[in-house]
Each structure stands twice: as C-alpha cells, then as structure tokens.
Picture (tube, rainbow, N blue to C red):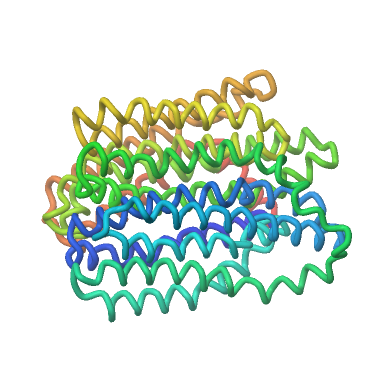
Length: 474
C-alpha cells in the first residue's frame, strides 16, 4: 500500500513539475512564437550540461544510499550531509566553468544564459533525492505547490511579448531555486546533528561517479537533440522539437514515477538478501508500466493532429509528425526505467546499466547528424526512438539469464491489442469530427473507455490479480 501511495505522490509531483509549462504552453506559443521558444530550448539545453556535470550522479546514488541507512538516524544524518556538501563543491566548480563559457557566447543571448544560470544554482540545493530515499514523497509535492502557482501567475502577468523572453527564463529558473529551498525545513523530521569530525565528503565521489556515467549519457541524449537541432538546423526547429518533447515528457512523468518509488524499496529488499522479492517487484512493475504506457503511446499519436492546432496554434503544425513519432518512446522509456532504475541499479548491476545508456547516447548522437541534415526535427524524433530501442534492447539482453522473460511480458499482447484498437478509434474520430476542444475531449474520453473495456474483457494478468484481490477483500 505504501508503494502505491508513494507512486501516486511521485506521479503527482512529476506531473505538477511539468504542469506549469504545459498550462502556459498555448499562451507562450503565441506570445514568444517558435523562435522565442527555440531560444529558450537551446540555451536551456546548454545549461543542462553544466547541471549534469555539477550533480555527478547524486540523484540516483543519493536515493539509494539513503535507502540503505534510513533505519539508523545517525548514519542517515551523516550520509545526507556528506552527499549534500559534496554536491555543493561540484556545483561550485561547474559554476566557475560556466562563467568562463559566458565569454564565448553570442552577446545578444548573454541575458538568456545568465537567466538560465539560476537553474544551475538551484541544482546545488536539490535534496529531493533524500526524501525519495526515505520514501516520503508527500513533502516534495506539497512544498512545491505554492511555488508553482506563483510561477504560473508570474508568467501570465509579466510575460507579454517576445521582448520578455529573458524574464520568462528567469521566472522558470527562480521557481526551481525557491522550490528546492522550501524542502529544507522538512529535514529536521528525519535527521539530527551530524558528527562533523566523522564526515568524509568525498568517500561518495567515486561510487556516485559510477552512476554519473549513465546520468551523463541519459541527460546528454535528452538535451543533445535540441542543441544539435539549433546548430545543424535552426533554433526554430529546436522550438518545434521542444514542444513535442514537452508533451511527451508529461506522459513520461506518469510512467517513470514508479522508478524513484521502487528504487529505495527494491534496494532495501536486495540489501536484506530477498532476491525472489526483488524479481517479483520487477515482474509486477514491468506489467504495470506496460498497462499505463501503451494507452499513452497510442493516445498521443492518435490525438496529435487534432490537438496541436488548438493547443499551440497554426504556427506549430510541424510539431504533429514529431509527436506521432516520439510517442513511441513513452513505452520504450517505461520499459527501460523498470529494468534499469528498478532492477539493475538497486541490485548493483551498474556496469550493465551504464553500458545501456552510454550506448543509447552514442547511437542518438551518431544517428542525429545524418537524420537532422535529411529531415530536420523529424530526423531528431526518429533518432530519439532508435536510441531508446537500443537502451531497452541492451538492458533486456543483460538480464536475460536472471529473469523469466515470459513472466516479464505476460499479457503484453492484450495491452497492445487494446492500445491499437483505441488508436484506430481516436484517429478516425479526429478525422471526421469538427476540430474543437469539446470534440478533442470526446475523442480522449472515447479512447480511455475503449482501452479500459477491452482490458476488462481480455483480463490481462495484472487486471485479473487486482480484481481477485478486490473480490477477496469484499
């Protein structure tokens, strides 16, 4: 029950983090236009590289280490301070390198980069990994609620034209910083006074570096698409891809929320030698991810032609094919998240996890060059799908002798059949109905009902077990 509760909290948090930009997207698309959106996407992709190198894998490593020692308050306290101060040092180094970088940027974009830099400062005070490790996901949701509402109000009241682009970037960056700072008061419920003389900041450095390698690879091929589009094509093309990516990531937040929830849970079970329990978690989580990701994948692809003209406006019509192609990654990333973050990382199989994401990053960068030259933003969407197939495929290969693949893919064809049927219906409705918000809502509702009804008829393993438990409880 705790896992389900934490999943809902984390899913809510991930959705909420993305909800503000999603709500403001139609407004900003019209106010800033493709070029303004593109400049933000490109400069943000650059600042993310500094955040990645400054964070050195703490997000996953810190979560796992906290989960290992959470039953001992003194060890938990010391571990938190060691990791936190280590990250302060590494982010400070990243800041110095960033200021050197500023001497080489376009002068007319300097204000955009400075506004983006507050996101780098925010990373130094990001302690969400601690609360994930102690499995308290409520605090991150509640504490950020007020901050995000203020952000939303600020955007609508202060960003009025393309000339306010730097102000818009600053609002987003400051919201990250303020949101992270509001988490600190909740720490006193979990930790006490550290044993300062026993703190060894850099004993965590090399272990976190092991997880830093896949984080570099993961984040690089999330950001490199926008960077390469801006360099090889135009920042406007980067803006088109940014909008597609934003909507797809909204869906991904729901799918990958299980990862951070299950990581400390599985880590704790593995630490206590309960491997059967660890594998059982993987089977259940993998099927749950499939059940959630399939309708999102097919749904995004089906609704894109009707949604984009209404949501972003006619200037963003090139986003439609990007969304339809990129929707496939929802399922692929859902699977790789279940295997990588929920199994390989907590069971200390870092080598296989590292190989998978590094290989995916290399494939993405190599594929991007010819595909961007040939098809621009569409090429980037294709390269993204190819790279995710590589990551997921390698991870499945890595665990083939540890896991029963039949259990892993139990009932998967039932989910795919229901998803395909939903796609056909929603896409057809989009072709025949008038393109209004009411009709789009009707299409989404029809798709959800179709998928749900088909699952109740086909009774996949997860649904069958859930219904049996409910019947037993009654």
